[in-house]
Image (cartoon, rainbow over all chains, first blue to last red; front, side, top):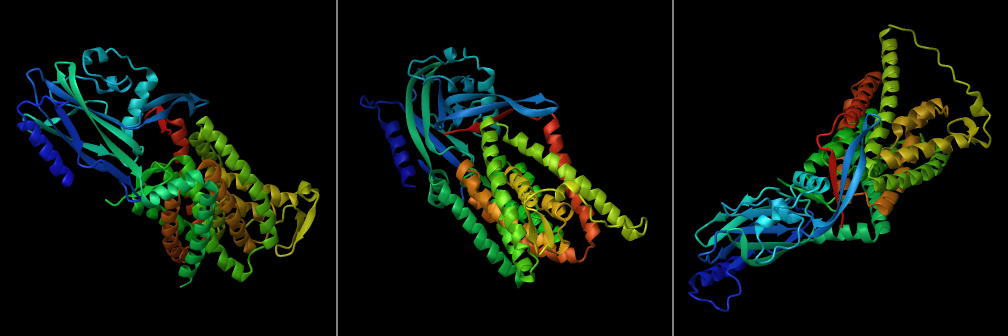
Length: 245
Length: 306
């Protein structure tokens, strides 16, 4: 709640400032939460993104991207061999965003995916130049499979204007998100040229029992294995006692 | 809706659904006296649990179920401890091989196809044999055919094998190589399929080792405990493929289900039960067979690394 108030105050200040020569950016963005704990009861969550912009005469719209931490993605393709479907071919896509969504205000025409496999968008970038990228088969397969896992939405989603200056969007984070640092960027556009950008971050991390069990399973697998065996022994004897009654 | 996050599988599941699976497996074990791992692993596939984790975690659940099951048999003296020990030694070797093979399959990206192939092959054969045998038994009961004369088959080559030792509880004097290799083979199945292997072990004990029916189930359960313990440890250690939260849910469901199954089982005839079991086994085999041969909805699959 305190965050919300702070943001509201910030938006308000931005609106009131008649001239703000020291103001670096005309656009701000934030989230209703900047930390998400993946605990044992985590089943995915919804996030609210909101921000404010002080539109200039040039401003025609906004583009917002949310990128998950980069991961190496193994994409496999099945093929038929002796009548059965095996994984015959595979490709590792190095350091692709594990999560990617794009929001744009109405009227902004952008193929969301065309910016994902490219270097960062800088001020003065023209989006029309970004459309030239042809995705190869494996990149497209990555997008399709990740979309099926709800980690990527390939089409740009609508960024709602709440007033002339305020905008917001809601973000769906499924339970299979990769923990790590998520980057949220908003670009203010003049036709297809980026005027100014703003960035904020979202931290998703394992917490509590989930973090402990994960760390044990990965860092000390021998202890973890023993723990599983002990669990079975105790519950096996416990069940026998229960069943005898 | 309540969700529970699985720390190793790194996804959330509906805990009641998983407990429900445990109940189904528990009922199976109460009804048929088999562990039900062959049904559990495919059920876990269906809700999107990665195959290697389904297989590894199944072994952990079967271990708990076998411990609670063996205690009654131990009390009654229906366990051939010496035979169990020999089978366990073989099982340790076989399961270590199986876990290593699984590791290679994971690296090759063929783990799901391979596991499904094993399922179709073994469940198909065992289900068919069981179906024919139980139908024949039921026909005898109905008086349609005469009971075939039981003769202890004299496999010449089996008695020619060296290193014969005595198994007093089973009343057998056979080569130690026989139970060792049987245990080894079933240990591999445990590692590769996430099954206890009772559905292969029990008939093999009767027909191959010639053990009396009374001690077969107890001895099978006894060795399954140690082999699944070994598999649990090795899968967790080598493949990071045991999810302890998933185990907990399955074990809870299994305890409830075993209660139900034992009660229902008393009301049904043995040969009817076996026909039912055979049909379930065959249905699972056929379903997985179609998954292997039908054109998949998507040709591509994705695995996110670190």
